[in-house]
Image (tube, rainbow, N blue to C red; front, side):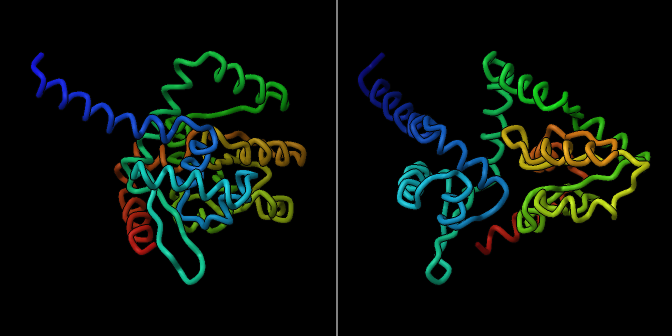
Length: 233
């Protein structure tokens, strides 16, 4: 290999390694997962990751340097978001790859569902079939602002902290499917536990909104709403 080619290859892979460095921290992966739900302030991210604002800012700076996130000032607050949908798809692919290849991750997921009264999960394909039949009620238990940013069509917004107050509005004779932020989130697990404790038949959707959007072209209008809102952030 001639010197020019070697220099070129070294430079290219060094740039690719910037992405690897950026996602080498579990905390930064968690931040990226949170930002898949929409834009958030440093303070909100710090609260949701149980970190100080200073530590959160340092992690965000690394993600900024690798071009995985962007931010905009609104008054005294900085709002961060994923750079584009390519980043969201990358994080989804990483999660799916890890679930397939990392045995320890598979065991962690199995243990959490077994220990919590064998929570039943369904895949997106199953949800689509049930929704077409009209015999399921879909609820989004994420924070209201995340639902407003993007959600699965037909879903009702009932944040987890408000679920018990809204039980009377749910059909007792129809299956309830709860979803949250996806594979690394337990809000929907908590929701299923609450629903089952009150006599509802409830299951958890294992997929996230991002997975739904990436695999359902017929809901491209939801893509547009997401992109439009984020373009103004």
